[in-house]
Image (cartoon, rainbow, N blue to C red):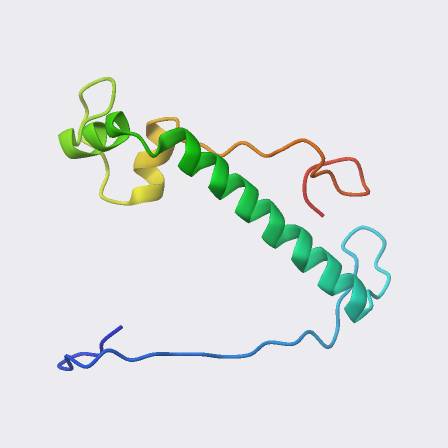
Length: 107
């Protein structure tokens, strides 16, 4: 990242640590051990969905579509990658077993 008028890349780093967490459903406080478990679950979910997308879409045909810049209806793809991916139907699928204790995906 560079600032206005600067060609020198800047690096940013920060550390976060939760000191208060509350369960959105019950309103009960959540201990840091549970926060760690939930964060690990979320990171595992992101890694699984990302891995599935890469294995499904990292093909020559995917890059041909992107290079053409058009969707299936010959409309120009949006400049924002996430919008173009959604229009092309490139949505992640989540593996079985990633259900939370409330019976739905996510916490």
